[in-house]
Picture (spheres, rainbow, N blue to C red):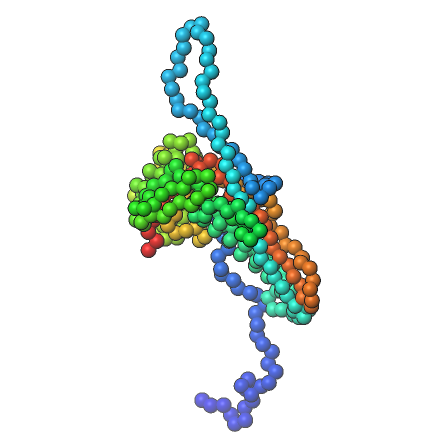
Length: 314
């Protein structure tokens, strides 16, 4: 079939209104499982400090009747610290942009500030799990918080050739070693070590690649089985061991080579300045705002945490 002669169609028309959806679709990941799950506490200085302590090992405790009591030697607490890190992003929009009709949002500034806040949380999440030492900073160097990689040293398994654990006080990062495959044996060993130290881990933070390895753990009865609902299941929601039960949580901002075993109560985010949107000085026909926050990681006792280190990532 063909059009009748002189048919006026949309290819000839001038002035057809654009068909632009009034919704903006964004599929970028914004979840921050570790940042969102740990306590938020107040910091009052750029150097946040806290103390840890341990009990002595058990011993034979028997005494002669009527004997004098003699004090035993006691150990002091351990004082730890971490520097606050400033997270900051800015948005500038023109005066004209402030009055035009934007599809999918009202004011461009408001839309961008929300977006920046989500991005900044991702930066914080990555910093918490980073293999990064504390940086005190100065007038020309930015302060940096020490991440988990600079604190966890006691319950670390699968350390590869050339690898070394940090001092555990945030002053240095761990040294990565030759990578080997993430295994159930290494994971169970780390869990046992945490239990022996008195920890009670409740979650595991790991990459999607390592999560796929965990799905192959022996005893995971949901391995591609058909559940009561008739759905095919391939899940590892909770892993139960003699040393405790933990939830596996995939995290996009974690280094894929690190599998963290965490007791959430033993971590906190100390906030010197909670994230806030602030107007900046006007310097022309525009509007400027910044989103700024200042915080640091608190590892209340690293013996309640664990790491399966140096895992292959492909």
